[in-house]
Image 1 (cartoon, rainbow over the protein chains, first blue to last red):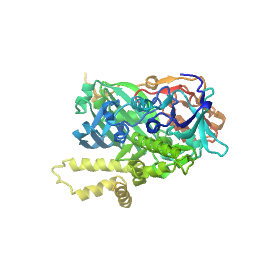
Image 2 (image 1 turned 30 degrees about the vertical axis):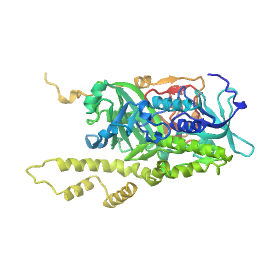
Image 3 (image 1 turned 90 degrees about the horizontal axis):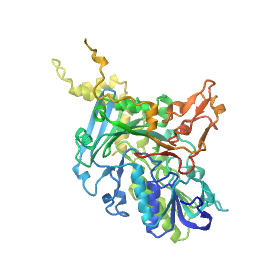
Image 4 (image 1 turned 45 degrees about the vertical axis):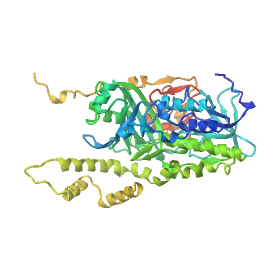
Length: 441
Length: 107
């Protein structure tokens, strides 16, 4: 790769900062529309800086990459999905198995981001986009009207000119911060994910988790974070188990607990530990997640600049649904299409780029976020984590504990007693149940 | 000789992984420039020192004089430290130069 980008000579239709799923999708859409587009990636290859919670739902690619499943770098197709509510010594699991999810067009897949992101960026390159790696976009270039018209990079002669810059530079997006679209720091609306990847032979994974070849399991957990708002996860790869926790950054700082201690709890939990017997640690990783949802999303377009993916807070952390990569791809495709339209009508001002947002209001990207806008507050609430998980587990344990010769207690009496034992106020319980009902209706 | 059942590890107990071994599983292409700089003077007046416990790579250590000692080499570039930092000017946070820093394989 040349050291000198000779960027001054060329004006790209679009420079996309970050070759993750948002950036690759934006570049793919632009290249398919015949526009000149350059992706700038700071890592040595796309995906090298990325970590996620394990499942990609890729139906969003149907239109731009028909039959993507024939070539996407899949570890396993998720055919089992569990939600586990736990305390240190209990676990209540809701487990769904759907064989249909293991057939085309599939539902969720486990994959590693360094594989998946590199594959998707490669599809953009095949379509005609250019990719430059190992290059940091260090700041925005503005014209004399203050409109964004390029980025500075850390390469000699590395100023890149573009009609539109698409910032897909991730959760810490320094470009969106420089543009004044995101606050400098916002610990209240971010979570930290830490993940351990453990090696095990594929057939051992299939036996322990009751899976067929290529079939995968996704477990989402609640109540395993010592009362810090957040949760845990376990995903099966082909020959690995990914185990981790996601916790509120604010809550973690306040609790003064080290993140790896939280995973250690999980690793030793009686519902998790037997599945990991004999495994070797392959990789440890950490990443931030934007969890503020619709209410904390930045303005998505200014003159000459669009923001997509994690940089735009496009992560759906709604408890029941935990999705990010599909939202990144969806916003990237929408950004690419909006830039194509703006260039065609020769207006790359915020007004000319406004179709980016409006187009997403009609698709899952903003519709799901808008509908779930109260979810982040609910799923990260202290009561849910510190009180309700224990209440639910105790209630379940008491229902199934046979107390002969004492006759079975009535459910209502059991519930009253359990609520009281956990110091939960009925008024709060009713309020939270109503809120939960409203969010997930 | 009888064995106290409390002394017997359950058969599924995983080996304890030291923090050094844990970090040794991660590839870092360490650059020459420290991408994060800590102004220890500012840290001295910080009462929480939340970075010390929150950093997943355990890169922040408290010094005897109440300051903060920081090592940038094994950084995940996650951003937790600047998010939890409440002392203005204590942390200067940038990305490592292009191609440097953490390289995940199973992220």
